Image: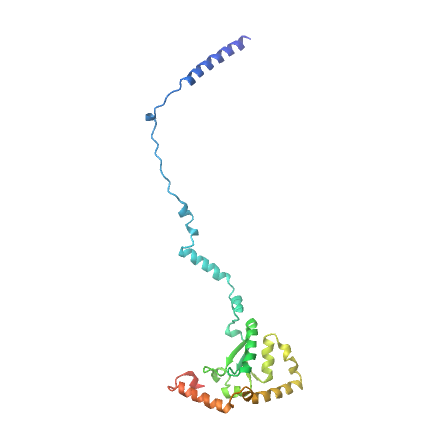
Length: 231
């Protein structure tokens, strides 16, 4: 009990002393406080995100590099119907001045966009040269249709159509001509067509075409230096 009373008295005295201090707070003079200087920190946001600005040449270069590496050159060429010149398996020599012939050529060319195995050469072009086509001159190819295989083999008549159609997924059209006597009969029918095709398409005889072609070359190549004069 004595210990409890003493503790109570001591606690009361301490509480009174603490309350007196609270009632008379110490006034601090602001003049005695150290002056604080505020420093502005530069904004680092532009530097931090400068790498993401789209108007920087370096970023454009990186984007272009990624885009070019992601594009498959082969796929791109297929979409546009283009193939490397080395990929052709048969070269078709056609008469670009024949309206009926061009219908078939255009159909094959459209199909060839998917396969890229046919190379088309217009013999009526001034750039045509026999030296680049197994020695086949204009007059010979005008008489009957010819084609050249990738290994240099020359084919003609119905076999040309059979091989061309096989290259574009239409081999079934001429498949029957592989067998005799159908093959011989088909060549005979084509021979008649080849003989009269100029008249049937409203064109002059081959002899007149050759004369006009030679005259045109002579007029264009008076200096005897152009490629057409050497054909």
